Amino acid sequence: MPRTLLLTRARLQAKAFAAELARISEIKCHIAPMQEMRDLPVEIDFDGVDALVFTSKNGVKSFAQRWQRRGIPVYCVGPATADMASDLGMVAHAASGNSQSLAALINSADVQHPLHLHGLHKAGDLPIKGRSIAIYEQVALPLDAKTIDLLAAGGLDAIALFSPRSAQMLADVWQANWPKAEFYCISKATAEPVENIGKTRISSQPSANAMLALLID
Image (cartoon, rainbow, N blue to C red):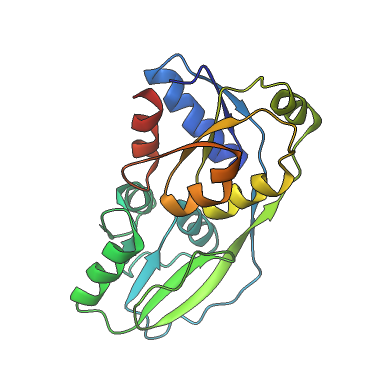
């Protein structure tokens, strides 16, 4: 179990994760966002859409803040995303936490014209019919000087990574003279960019709850 953990995800998500980690463990978190979410200026024609598809809570948040369409059923990648959608007044169906289960759920339902609303940087296309529109993006941010000093001095016990993109961003700025690190990764794809700069551990499921379990194991 790490004593001090670096979180590089967007600040609001990092703070929520850190609070939950503090509730169940003595791990302290150092938050240094390398991304921030920004809505993209898009217009959407909802005519004929009989299902909305979300692969992240960011997508649900971006949608709910700008459009008042609550009567369209939504299909979400996992329970946490579905819970957020339900809390915001949507009728949500949850897959088991990955894109394969989400596609299977949608393809088995009586859905003819789904609309996938997602971020600009996504891992891949869902194997479903229908349209796909990016409604937000994660803008890259540089590491702050304090975090760089801590990494250079080995002052952080571990780093939590929640997406392949964030892992690649960190790997791109990693210096050869920094001490080896331990990375807790939400998926195998997330672990791949940092395999050469430290030890990697991969969560059993691509979810925040699975990451919490991995960190306190």
